Structures are given as C-alpha cells and as structure tokens.
Image: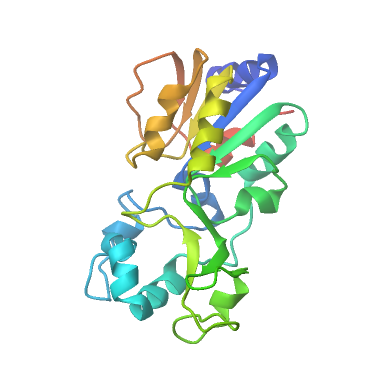
Length: 242
C-alpha cells in the first residue's frame, strides 16, 4: 500500500461522518462514458445535427422530443453497466460509517451496489413522470416505448426525472446535501471535474478540514487539507479495507 492510499485509509478509519461527492468518473469503470474528458460524450461528432451537450437541455427536449429520446436511449441508458469497485466499497462502508453519497450521476449504480444514503443531484434514469397527470414510472416505460414514451393513463408525454440544462436542481436534495456537508469531518471528491454548477459549488459548504480528491486529472481546490490521488476511483478503493 503506497503512502497516498495509506493516508486515505487512515482518514477513513478515523472519521465519523463522511461525504462522498462523485461525478461521471465514478462510473466510467463500469463502462459508462463521461461527458467532458478527451474521450467523453461531448467530444464525439453528433449524428443528430446538434451538439450532444445541447441535446441535454430543457429547450431541446421540449422542441425535439422524438430526437431527444433517440439520443437518450442510445447514450444515457446502459443496462449492461454494473457497479464497480468504487460503488461496492461505498456500499460496504455505509454499513460501518455515517456515510452520505452525493452523486452527479443518473445511472443508479450506487443503489444497485447497495448504498442507501444517496443524494442524486441530477436525478435518475430510473424515475420518470408524466408531464400531464404526474403518474410515475420506472425505466421500463422508456425502454419499451417506440418513439416518445406516452402515459398509458392520459396519453401525456413522459419525461425522465433527470435534471437537464436550464432546469433547477431539486431543492430537497440540495438542502440535504448542504446539511451532510456541513456536518462531515471527511469529504471525498471523486471522478469529477467540478465544472458543472451549481452542483460543484456545494463543496464550499463542507464544514471539516480534511479533503480527499480522487481524479485522473488534477483539480484546483484551495481550502482544507487536501490529499490528491490522480488515479481511477475504483482502482483506489479496491486497495482499501473496511
């Protein structure tokens, strides 16, 4: 065990309230493409005539719903993805520590691994809602639809409960995230560029002093005692014990 991993192990062992703040890099080891890296989704040539980033906006969803769902089913739903070492470690750690996972991901892999205390800043592909009557559906309504999924009760358009660009974050999730951060004595930031606001601004509410950053690329965090490990998240967590 190298010195960085040993320091991380010590911090986890001696902390009581831990917040894990994760981004797309947590799920790349499960085969889910991230967005902003050099190999990310936003760097690909779009076959739909508009940049993929634009297609994840509220405006695009409302004006081009059919094309949105073609893109969404191809790139945002990956049923073959399974929890990796990071997801599994956190699920097991939750059994021993007061741990809250704050995730920017919408894939539901933390819950699939067994985590219970998960705050999904950007929603989930597994929750869907009729825009007319409010009826809620699981992922199968989208997967099994031909074209735009419609509510079987009223015929309204079904929208994924994911936060698109131009949409606000859920206020309850925001408040719960702030509360967890304010009471944490260890913050682990992993697999994120911290470039998506307002989500990334949340770490400023962290009330402790120890911060661990696990990311392939260096991040600029200028407060607290920062331990930075520039390796894949799952690779790091697979070297730890609980």
